[in-house]
Image (cartoon, rainbow, N blue to C red):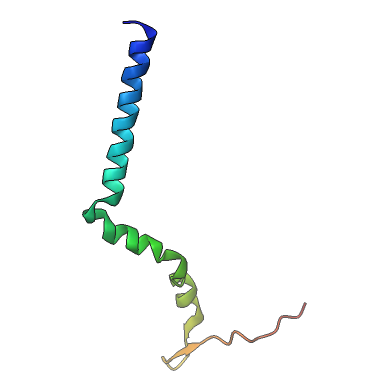
Length: 72
């Protein structure tokens, strides 16, 4: 095999790999996963939500005052 044949085989393998990735990305079974991932920038951070809600001494949940000023 000469260099031209190897380059042709490599080109065909690269094209098959590219088409495989396109088929995987646009297939219907991945649509739900990609739609969920697309909404991640708009989702609120869960650890932040849990930190904002604290238990008061009498057992009631109360939100932390976010307008509190710092002594800078």
